[in-house]
Amino acid sequence: MSATPGSAQARPEATPPTPPSAPKPAPLAGRPADSIRAALLIGACISAVWLAGSALHAPPALIWAGALVLSTVSCWAVGVLPEPTATLLFFLSAVVFHIAPPTVVFSGFTSTAWWLMFGGAVTGVALRSTGLALRLADIIFHKRVGTYPQVITTVALSAVGLAFLMPSTTGRVLLLMPIVLALADRLGFAAGSNGRIGMVMTVAAASYMPPTTILPANIPNSVLLGAASSLYHINLSYGSYLLLHFPVLGALKTVVLIWLICKLFPENGPMPAQAPVTQTAMGAQERALAIILALAVAGFATDAWHGISPAWISLAACIVCLLPGIGLVSPKALTEQVHLVPLIYVAGFLGLGAVVESTGLGSAISAGLLQVLPLTPGHTAANVGTIGAMGAVLGLMSTLPALPAVLTPLARDLAIATGLPLESVLMLQVPVFSTVFFPYQSPPIVIAMQLGGVGLRHGTRLCLTMAAITLVVLLPLDYLWWKLLGYLP
Image 1 (cartoon, rainbow, N blue to C red):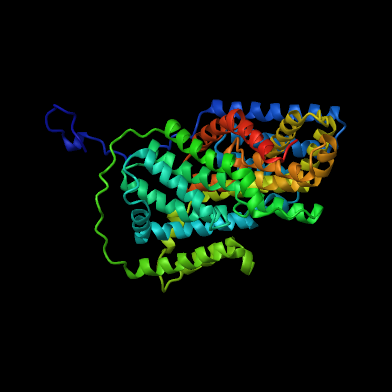
Image 2 (image 1 turned 30 degrees about the horizontal axis):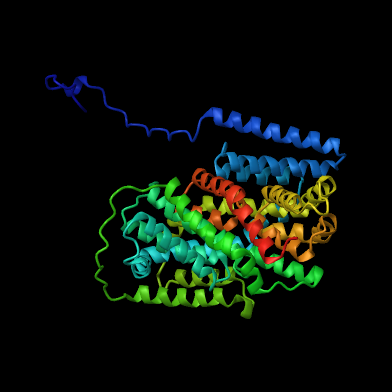
């Protein structure tokens, strides 16, 4: 019961009982116009693919597969639908319209990348809850973070340097992200601030882009290495690969990336003074987690020797953290802090790559492009640009880790059509899969963004800008470097 402000005492018998207040409805996510725009975009994609497929007399199954892939990719890239909504729509459409078997459509949930992310999410919760992440952040970054550019530089160099020691990109992301987030908290960078976004995107981009120039550091590198050996008996050496790619697309790209992140996500707010932090003795839980992580990192770094995937190492570490006797992550923390939405999104773009491969869409597009591309022996610059454009188109239709599996079987035909050495044609894939136009093309970048709580808009902004700089500045310099080393006539 309440009285009107300024009135006399209210008479209880004259005041009707106040009904319990109903809960306010949650605000709608987005606007109805967003759904209309999404429907128009999907309709335009279907119409475009249907017209192109009909003109080329493509099988209906291939047309529908192309329409689904283009629609999903467009929704992810433009952001007209929330990421989980677009992903669930992809799952439903692929199964209902029999575009691919359910085992293929939902294969992302059984992939190693998905389990890497799940295991890393749980160990990330353990790192934060035990305080070990903050301790590691202080040890690694102490006296190196006096200014915001120094923060970004230190994070980038840590990510690239770790690539020489740990061959799993996602493993590096899972190791660095909780540490970097703890550092962001200590520096006062709240969720949604430019400083925090910049640090997360530095881990995401620097863990994937420059390390594509280090032979065993990324999945596309390893796929290219294995395919070149099995198909053409060409064994790519660590040293020659590093010399050809790292100076421009590795070292120089890291410098450009640091500068670009400081420009796109400037943080001008005051940073806490970097006074020495009084270190307390490690508790039992911190020591236990440190041992678990040390064993996991050792397993990540030696996976080529023991043959156990980093995914299962990550899952094993996750299970140990969940054991009741150890108590690093409680069941409540598991349900509340390990979020479902990022896992759905990761399974979605991994499933999309599987659909592209299983339906033959990638092979059909690449074979069709090979017939119409203006490849002529003797025109080296034009041929290199054309092969790069072809790879970029294929990379937009699937994920970049799958690109070498599609392009490598075509390398001999491309070498004959262009007159370039076969090994040079194989190496031309590296500038392609190191250039990311949209985050969904690289699973580790998406995983880092999701773990760091950064939205697709910020990732797309960075990737597109970095891709533009790469096309205009870095790739021409890389072309001259190749010419200097004698890889191109």
